[in-house]
Length: 167
Image (cartoon, rainbow, N blue to C red; front, top):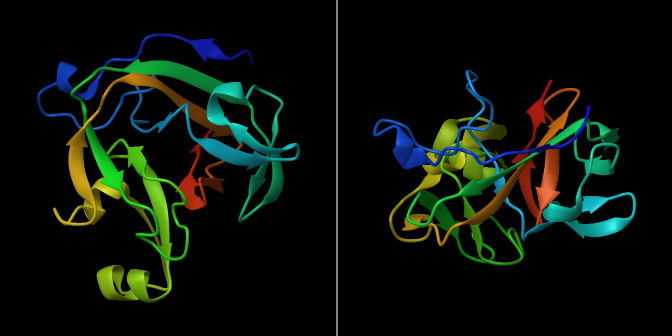
C-alpha cells in the first residue's frame, strides 16, 4: 500500500477528543512527531524518512516490514505529553519527547508494577501525566507519523518503547 499524505484533524477539532485522529472513521488516535528517530535494518532513521517496505526493529516480533505510513500535521496548541530525558529509565527517552496523549507506550518492571499491578503495561502516555515530570504541554505544531504494521508491535523511538498501529 502506498504511503498516505494527508492533513490530519487536530485534537481540538472535537472538543471531547484527545490525541490525533489518524484514519477517518477509525479509533486509531496516535502518531509520533516525524522529527524523532526509530531503529531500522539500516540503523537509526528519522520517522519522516520511513516508507512502506522499511524493515523496522521491534521488541516483540524482531524485524518487521512497515505496511503503511500515515503522515499528517498536528496544529500548534494541540495537547501533547512532554517526557523529559530518562523519565522511564536510563536514556528512556534519550531526548525530550512530546507525544499525543493517546500514543501507547510500554512500561515494564517496577514502574508497571507500581502503577498498573503488572510486569508490563501498554498504556496511553496520557495516563502517565503527573503534572510534574510527565506533563501536558501545547504542541508547537508540525508533522506526525503513524507506522502501520501487520499487527500492533513495540518499537523504539529515541530509546522509548512505543506501540505501532496494526492492520
